[in-house]
Amino acid sequence: MKQSDLLNHGSIKEALSPNSIEHISKLIVLDEVDSTNSLLIRELNEGNGPVLVCVAKQQTAGRGRSGKVWHSPLSKNIYLSLSWEYKVPSNKIEGLSLAIGIVILNVLADFGYSNLKLKWPNDILYDGAKLAGILVELIGDSRSSLRIITGIGINISMSVTAGSAIGRPWTDLSSIRGQSPPSRNELLAMLINRLIDFFAFYPEKGFVCWQNSWNARDSCIGKNIQIVSNNQIQTGISRGVDSNGRLILETPEDLLYITAGDVSLRECAK
Ligand code: BTN
Image 1 (cartoon, rainbow, N blue to C red):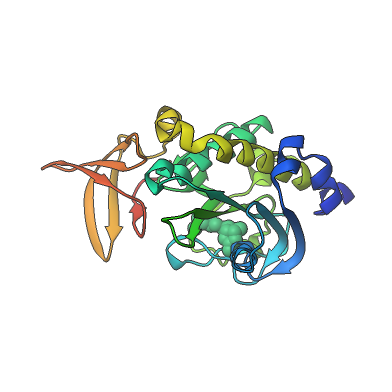
Image 2 (image 1 turned 90 degrees about the vertical axis):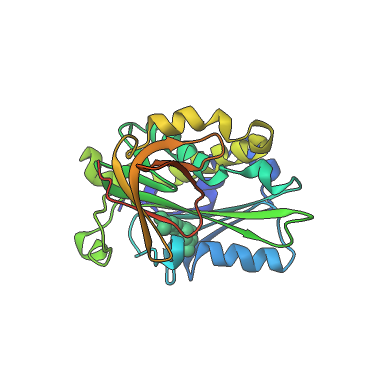
């Protein structure tokens, strides 16, 4: 591993924008943690925040959506969490977790990775294989404030052995371009900068500003899909997302508007 690719507090901080520096209460860089999201939840519950950032070299209990495990070996991946606090009604942040997918795609495109796709609600794919995932969690009393923890896992360089535990097709940045991936410190700083700009304006703009970009990068639009929820399967054609980020499923009878939550989408690949 090149020296420049070792996760380093100073190198990340150096590449943060003045706006990010101004917002971030604490930047935590760890060798190991159970889960960067869980750590931020503990920090927030202890009264720290509101804007905390945690990155780790490995996670011993990395968490994915719907209670799944996020395999987080010590390799050259990214495990990042960032917290934010809003004092707006929750309907103002509908679709936020989907829009974060676009923020990540835009950052990766700036590093030369342009053919990436989204799979509703939160997967980032390359050629049908999962490259990155997003886990957004809310804590606290949503009537007075919304505290949001956004966790992002991006496979940068993962050995076949380390990835063998993942029970689905996966890829990493190293395999996509067949050349050295970007420095993680630079990539992390860019992600943090863009996320902070994004969070500052999201409620003002809303998902409607992201809807077209999202649908343009949707890997499933126009394809047959299955939505699985509580062991029930609904089949139809994906018509992309609406202005609130709900998935539009065209069934023979009706158009259904599906909200994320504990729903998973099957059957759509590239
Ligand atoms: C998914 O696709 O299921 C979401 C994966 C989210 C993984 C990231 S890694 C950093 C943060 N900490 C966690 O425990 N999970 C998220």
